[in-house]
Length: 530
Image (cartoon, rainbow, N blue to C red):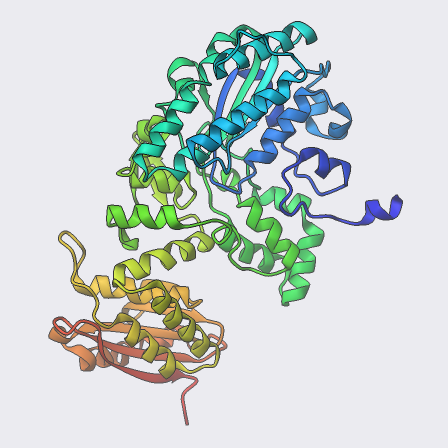
């Protein structure tokens, strides 16, 4: 047993609080916030992106309401709770119920399970009557108000967002069930509902007029996810092991994790202390000792792709989207409300708040890569497989130091660039958007319009084995020669001469009529070729 206690176990993919505590997994203590949710307001709704720990939070609440005091020993909640009554908990999980028939079958089966404990009356036929009877009987038997927990309540509604007929059927099933929650208010200690998106046409939002929306409350901003300090306090051995594996210091390891997985803000207070890391990605990265995409590749992006295509949104419009406070806090996700959808699904987060307006931004590199793997094919009007193939060959060429090979693939990728749509930025800016994001997906760190002593560089692409300093010119604005001249006369590459890797000056001529990269020129500027 003592040997087992020395083994540090990461809760990779675990959603059971009891399993985490019983089997000695690392647990970041959020139980003070759990107690507040359980005891402050009766009806609660919490939205967070997928894989953000909603199910674990719901399970922790269930263990608390069931009076499993032994699981909480040593945690913050022990200073707050004195009585530990054992309440009846009714739990529902709507994930994977993608049709009205599946949802109806699930509700019937789940209610029947609880009716084995509290026998059903012959007169209780409808879902809401059966549920109401269960809550009343549980209250009378235990002497305590019941807890009702809904996990991923919106999963069927999200799945059918583009199927109007099936979507309406699912709404009707929900409307036949949720009214019991209002009728049973006297028997209810706490209602806790989790999901990604908010659908106010459902009866619990319209009939329970005092539902508390916890999602954007500052006091609950960090209840799901890990803060930077929590990572330092709870995962130092794992940080050291990851650093050793990659040849990094702890500080470098933290920087790599922060750039990839941090940056989510869920309230108008956007300080470093209120930012959280994606917990799913952070745990997986520490377990594997590598920085890769976890969260973005863990679920289907079809709905996102359909939404972006339908709204005709290019990636250069994502950063800086603005949404008003009422919309963010109370509105439904619809096919036309792209900013709200992207925020609630975790592809955008809060950057700033001013005068009842939220300014949104892409939170981190993991999300940016996921977004642009969808956005870039749409913007180029090319098949995803073709785009991914070109990007992968660019990545390989850069790894091998083959700048010529990288540029050939980029030229192929950007060929026949679609005409700019009405209201878009200038053609040169559009080219820059496409080029920078192709390089970004190829693994580069990008600086755009970088100001240096000699002027402003269009693009700088940093990769493991070198730096590309890039100047772009349309053919009707001097083209290749003008780009080469600007790079040479302003000596842009000199700004990176102190870097311990090769620096390449890359001039690019872009077509104004013949769409694409017409010509390019590569000069190894530092260290100079002798």
